[in-house]
Amino acid sequence: MIYAILLFALTYVLMLVFGKYRPYIALCSAAVFIVTGMLPLSEVLGAIDFNVLMMIAGTMGLVKLFIDSRMPALLADLIMEKVPSVQMAAVALALFAGVISAFVDNVATVLMVAPIALEICKKLRTNPVPFIIAIAVSSNLQGAATLVGDTTAIMLGSYAQMSFLDFIVYNGKPGIFFAVELGAVVSAVILAWLFRKEKEPVPKGEKRTVVTDYVPTVLLVGMIALLIGASFLPVKPDVTNGLICLTLMAVGIVYDFARKKDKAAVTEPLKAIDFETIGLLFGLFLVIGGITHMGVIDAVAELLAQVSGGDLFLIYTVIVWASVLFSAFIDNIPYVATMLPVVTGLAGALGVEPTVLYFGLLSGATLGGNCTPIGASANIAGIGILRRAGYEVRTRDFVRIGIPFTLAAVIPAYIYLWLLFGA
View 1 (tube, rainbow, N blue to C red):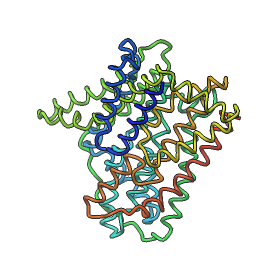
View 2 (view 1 turned 180 degrees about the vertical axis):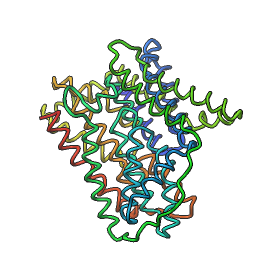
View 3 (view 1 turned 45 degrees about the vertical axis):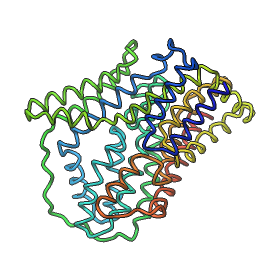
View 4 (view 1 turned 90 degrees about the vertical axis):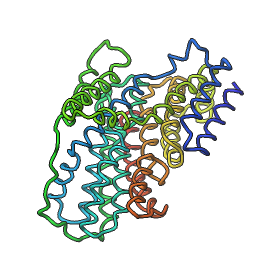
C-alpha cells in the first residue's frame, strides 16, 4: 500500500508541475502499476470506463459539426436582438453559454460563444475581457447540470450508474440540475451587478447569421433524446451511452462528407476530439484501479469517517468546500476520478446512501474551477482567445468576476443538496 500511495502522489505532483504532459504521465504511471503487479492484468479492462471515453469522443466530434453549421452564432444574434444594454448583453451571453454548456463540453461552448462576444464588443467599442470571463465561468457552472454537460458529470453518471434523467429527478426528488439552476439564477444577479456601469444601448438592425446546415443541430438534439430514452431501458450494455454518441458523430461525418465531397469533412471532426483528455482519463482509470486494488481507497475512506466522527453533514461540507478549493488550482478531472471511489467508501463506512456526497463532489469540483484563471480548461481557452485578439487577462481581472460568481453558485447549491438529499 505504501508503494501505491507514493506512486500515486508522485503522479499527481508531476501532473501539476508538467501540465503539458499530463496524459503521458498518467499513462506511464498506469504502466508502472501494471508491470509491478499493483494492478493485476486480470483487472485492467475492468478498471477502464469505456463508456466515459466513448461519450466524450462522440460528443466532441458532433459539437464540431454543430459549430461549423453556424447555429450557435444565429442563436446569439437572436439573443442580442432582445437585450437593451451592454450590461444585459453580458448577462445574456453568459446565460446563453450556460444553456449550451448543459449539453455541450465547456471548452467547446467557450469556443462557440467567445468569438461572438468579441465581435459584439468590437461593435460596441467596449473591453471584451470581462465578457469572455463571464462566458467561461457560466459554461463551467452549467457543466454539472446534465449527464452530458461536462467530463466530470459523464464520469459520475457512469460510475454511479445514473441516467440522463437522474440528474433531473433522482429517487423522486429534484436532482442536481435544479441545484445548478438555482446557482445560475443567483450568479446572474451577481453578473448584472458586476456589469452595472455598462449602460450603453445595444445597436439594432444587424444582419442575422445564416445557418449553413440544420442536420448537426438535429443530431445533437437527437443525441440528448436518445440518452434520455436509453435511461428507461431496464437492461442495456454498459457502453450504451457511448455507442449513442459515437454513432451519431459517425452519421454526422458521413452526411457531411456526402454533402461536401471533401476529406476535411471527416478529418476536422476527428481532430476536434480531445485525445489528450481521453488519454489522461485512460491512464487515470488504471492508476485508480491500482490504488483501489492495493486498499488505498478503502483506507482513506475509513480515515475520513473516523476523523469526522461519522457526522454526514461534516463530511458533506468538507467534500464540497475542499472540492472548490482543490479545483481552483488543479484539473477537476483527475480530482473527481480519484474522489469518486473515496466517496463511495465513505458512504459505505457510514452506512448511508452516497447521493448527497456524489452531488456535493460534482458541484464543488465543477464550480471551484471558476475561482482562478487556471482552474478549468474553459477558463484557459477563453484567456487564449483574448490573448490572440491582443488582450491580456490579469489574475485580478479574473478573480473579480470568478470568486463572487463561484460563491453565488456554490452556496445555494450546497444548501439545496443537503436539504433534499442529506437532511
